[in-house]
Image (cartoon, one colour):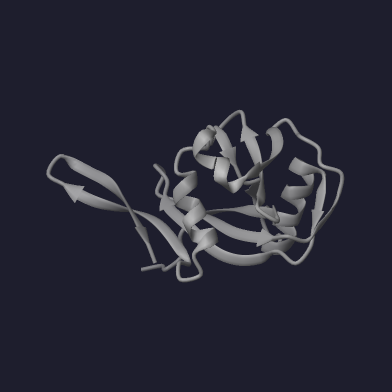
Length: 153
């Protein structure tokens, strides 16, 4: 039995300065305020992939992104969907929005007053808590199918 499986690898990056975080108001897919990021291309370095995605979506060049966690779940096609979480406060360039959505600096204290993407506040826990490194949606079997259960490790 093969241990290989199909996987989709993506990444998000928290860019922060002082008490503000840079968020993208996504207009499709995962709609609402979330961190910039996207798919890592085949054979692309994870670090270079998140730098590319951030530049494409924000106009900013980021430096020294630190891997701070991961999110995963199985897709409907039984692929493992992996989201690598990076963060940095080192960047340069002029902020610009893209077709993905408008970029905004937001005070952390204003998060609950804004339209954040579904599950974003759970995602933020992994970025903020040094004791957490993984967020996973696991299948819990029920008598009539299954339900998704969110777990943190």
